[in-house]
Length: 317
Image (cartoon, rainbow, N blue to C red):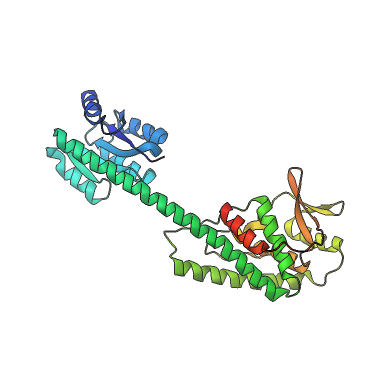
């Protein structure tokens, strides 16, 4: 729901009542009589507040302190300062430092006040629409990032074991879907498209090197017990009754969910390398409140499993 309320902060009770009566027809009004009370109102109703109007001269902290607080913690709120003509210099300073959108001079002129607040509400609505578009874009890009990583892992797998890489990647994707892989964190203020693609490409090259190193470390494949023992040693897990019991599933999803741009650690690559080493012969299954790794049925891979996995993992992001 879009924010639509106006918060007015002033230590004068008459000013609070007058403001609420004048502005109430434009939007719901919340009031507070101090900077501390204003912070308390923001902590409860911050997501619903579109515009914050604050008097400058109040006992204790001044209004611009609350506006600065709102700028840091509630950047979506359009901030305005109301002040007497004699304090215009402070208002101008607040504008220049980015604390407020504009100031409203006291004493108020009714039509000017309503016009300024109407403009502020319209600006808030535009910001909300912009933020929604940005969020949609971010979610779409995060979905593409997960899909791109899975594609990259398929290529890495083909280079490591041309005979069985697809089954291994199927088991890898299946495990990530079952445990509910979360979206990778992306600092969109830091990354533009080209830089992120470059970072992810370098990350993929690092994964390929780590996978090769793990395959060499695992050595020659023997029986199922030996394979499970190798994985247990890497993940710090326990093998009981011919299956490996996992308390944590992060190792199964880290290659898809790690923050964007950073390198993949050797530990992050162990699960994929092990699936390639065992040629996808083991699957992840739920076991009560935990998970277990056990031999999987040797069945044909579902048609279009990769496209399905990309779509479903993208929807999780």
